[in-house]
Amino acid sequence: MAPSIEKQRLSVQKQVGAANAAQASGSFFTIPWPQPIAWSPQPVCDPMPGDQLAGLVDTVSKSNSLKADLLRAVIGKESGDHPCAVSPKGAQGLMQLMPATSEQFGVADPFDPKQNVEAGAKLLKQLLDKYKGDVSLALAAYNAGTDRVDKDGGIPQIPETQDYVKDILGKISKQ
Image 1 (cartoon, one colour):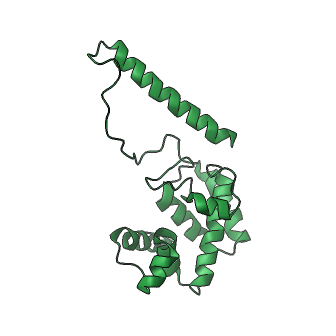
Image 2 (cartoon, one colour; image 1 turned 90 degrees about the horizontal axis):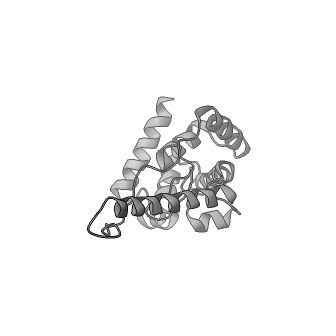
């Protein structure tokens, strides 16, 4: 939990620094003009080093009977290997766990790579079991949720989900 608190503290310091810089620049306004809050696809941390991520993926994939290339492709698509990634919908960490998923799998710190990848792998394994090994349906459910996949009887007609499944299947079929 301490690393995520530290990241939040640094983020607040950057925001305060930006406000002070605007004020010091002689701007007419004493605080920066409010801008719409937009999600940035660029997380404020570096991607996890490849050798560390590979070791983590290998260990977690074996313990969950998953193919390492599948787990690696999901991580790459979800977060671009950034352990501090946060989506506009609130998904967090390498495997972009929603808070309810983190709670379901007992994740204390969703930004901790080990906890995050272990929980994401368990979820992915559950989805593969539910859909009898159908990777396309499991990936669609990881992205859009099981309710939507079940309701639609397959990959939902959601462009984001269709692209998600196609991109990941393309990565794992090349390996």
